[in-house]
Length: 147
Image (cartoon, rainbow, N blue to C red; front, side, top):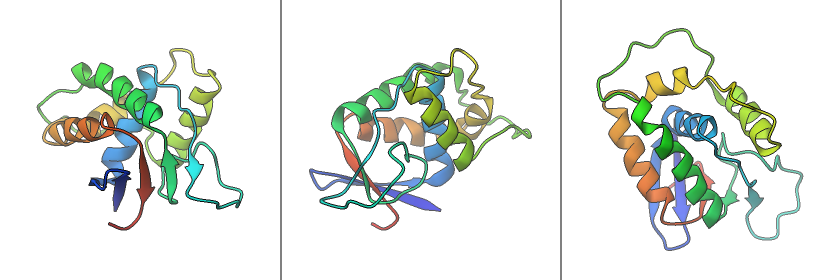
């Protein structure tokens, strides 16, 4: 599945959902403390404020996007340019959401195992991750399911 990141300057970035989750986990493992998401406009429904893992028309602020990129970049040296075999490691949306919630509370310590994310980002996806981080460093965005 593809997610679409819409910046306020009109730029749109399409990202594979697994690549997105892997970048989030890599950032968490390297010190990113999520600031929380906001619903678009005047929506008042009860949304998960730490929902970064799945698109729901939520806004991620500029500083948070930059911190996310910075955390993931700190972890990039651990991601090899050759593709690693995928092992049966914990990975996925619910795990990522749990890690995000715990990171926001400062409740992680050094226990985050990002090996699953590193495996997913290894090889050709590594350059896609770098391009995503470049996009994130340019500012805040809205996470959507459509271009």
